[in-house]
Image 1 (cartoon, rainbow, N blue to C red):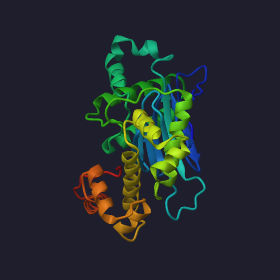
Image 2: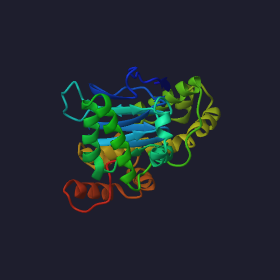
Image 3: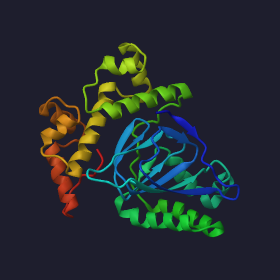
Image 4: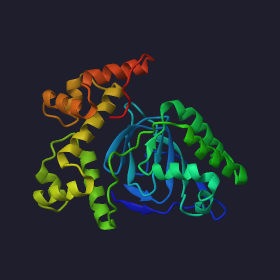
Length: 301
């Protein structure tokens, strides 16, 4: 798993591009690109990693990923699914610093440019606006020429009406890394995501990174601003929330053990420290939300 610097292919007669995916899984490598990415997940389930933050993603959700934000959508097949094409998404790419640069410097685009500058950490579209924005994305995808461009401007302008957007990452953004460091960080992320349900000792993950435990701790904290244990716990709780929301479990204890915790007491403690609620409260609020009754939880950890 590498942090790859992508160049999104844009035709010579286009300044924006849309991409429709219907695949067994999303692209599996941690990557980044200059283009801002707006992805509507039409069908799929898994974990979105953006820099050092994780978000469980579900069907009919839309994410804005900022320019040069390392990210990957880790697909996860739903229990009982036999469909070889498990994910479906529509994505819009555009680079406000490329051919569009002069446009966003116009006085009429002052507020839009400010919005883009303030959204470098990315965000998830609030559920109340998903229908409106998804229909606008479809219109852009199905249009051509000036009609497509005008639909794009209308979409970007619409974002100015949405209040209290929550960024995908908290705090300041991670510092840029060179390709070699990016490859190593990507490998570490991938190893943790694939082995979170087992006991991962510090010595094991350090050996995978070809470092001493002490050097690994310093390296991981420097590049993620999290300790290894904190990051591992967030991965495990994120996976636990998906299992609870998916309903494919026979008890909360089973979820705890299947997510790598060796005791239900430790699971409850870590779950509450990360989500600010107990597993039972999370499950109860999620069930209320699913049945249309008042609740405050979301599907992400």
